[in-house]
Length: 421
Image (cartoon, rainbow, N blue to C red; front, side, top):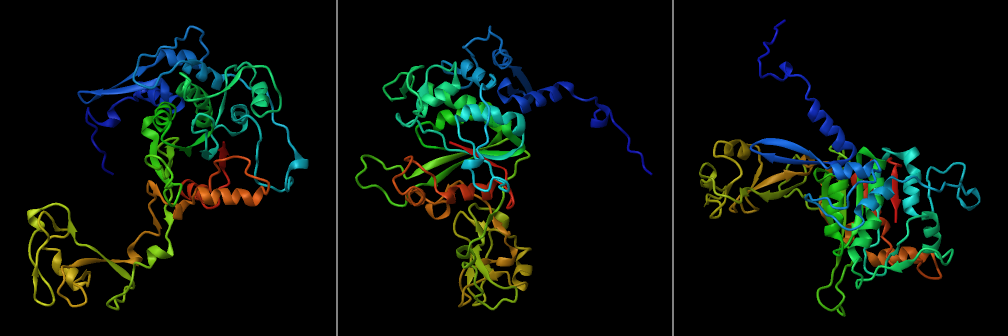
């Protein structure tokens, strides 16, 4: 047995870094508390005391937080709302349910702020995936309650079940609080959603250009900028509106944040169309393949040399490019039949990529076409098939979009999706 000598600079000779451990714990629980800066190769952490005061309900907390980030009037109050206890409870409705005794699904109807609070006791840290389709803040797509004293009362008024009480106004673009009202509505809900996610969980949020910048700013604060995963562009329409003035927006965004670095996306299943690109042009015993470029988009002297084709023609990479393999690797590639010179044997070589060599799935990208994830017309038709007398709301999402989100963020047998709108 050999005993390794421990040097003074070895990690084994150092005690635990308690400060770093404390910072990591704080960032895991409350990402908005800690701001890290790097200078001269050294990272230092700063604690936002005003945010800490707000998290514990300290009445001396100030609205002004003079640090980098998004601030608006009412932010401290919005944070307090997410921490205040709920005044409601959940009531089962067996008579209105389907397969009450055997179903594995749960649908909750109510004000989503109240419901998110009520879910904390049973589901905190347990949701693998949350998908939300919030109001885009177009000016008429949500009603903002100015009085938060009784959220259940506000819910009844917002849904038209009662009249009178707290002042309720639509959030129009003429309002000086246009973005502020939307942020005050979104912030506490995202804070509560963050608490529901598992360490390997994801949140997907639909949005358009109107609030994408503000949404990303508050998500960076709540989930941590390091947990930003992607901003997906979803092609919501398949043809431009010719009667549109200006530039027609044919896409929405789906903003994706992970709960921590434990979250991993899945490969998407390959399609028949993708596999059809692989054919066996030379009866290679290894099966179907496709030709891929054998050059790289930069010049490297060691990989710029002539190759003699089977027809005797000498070929070079294009100017400014070079081969993806060295001169020493070329003989083995030729002997193994890994290069393709075209049917007449005189073309510039391509590499053969065999279907058996590719991954079992496809890496997700940030561009989701209407062919991949559905479109607006499709979603409206789906809703019309359920509600014959008219659409209950104007902006449904297609089931194929939700299915694509499930494929990316959950396992095939996952039953842990939480969605609210």
